[in-house]
Each structure stands twice: as C-alpha cells, then as structure tokens.
Image 1: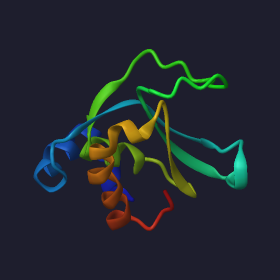
Image 2: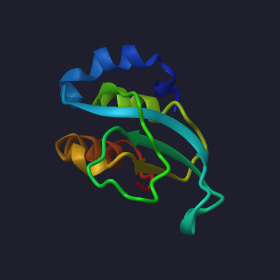
Image 3: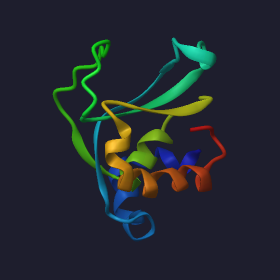
Length: 116
C-alpha cells in the first residue's frame, strides 16, 4: 500500500498514459462502516457519483457539488485507505457514468482483489 500514500496529484500525473484521461463527476470518496444490507458492519470505501435521473421518492441524498475526476485520481484516492472490505459505487446514479465505469472498474480488479 505504500505506493498509494504518494499525493494524489503526483500519482495522477505519473499514470495518465496508463489510466487514460476520461473524467467522471464524483461528489465524494470516503471510508465508513456500512450500515445497511449484507455487508452491514464492514468497513467500505464509498465512491459517491453526482447526478441522478431516477427521482426516487425515498432518496435521502441531495448532492449539490461534484468534482470531475480522472480514473487515476479516483483509484489513488481509494487506495490511500487501508483495512477495508470492499468498494461501494453509490450516488446519485453511478450508471449515468457508464463510460467512466468501464475504464475505472478494471483498474480496481488489476490493482487489488477487493470486492466492488
């Protein structure tokens, strides 16, 4: 995990050729303990995407800001965290960023065998 302690911007600059330059709208990336479902109580890293077209009546997530992040930046931001079970893609609606996800998800599989 030592490589991932390098500042995010340094990693992004060094890996653009490897990871491409596609950008996704990400509201936040953070580590927390899952409170719902079969993974309740486990440590997970959340990637919260911005934007949603579903308009669900039960939604409790009102996002007001985002940052356009490259795949390299997201990967390096996730791997600064240690001791987590899996990665959660949430939103907003992550599938609105399908082209970004097509580039992002294989990177996690190649770098580490964490669940997504």
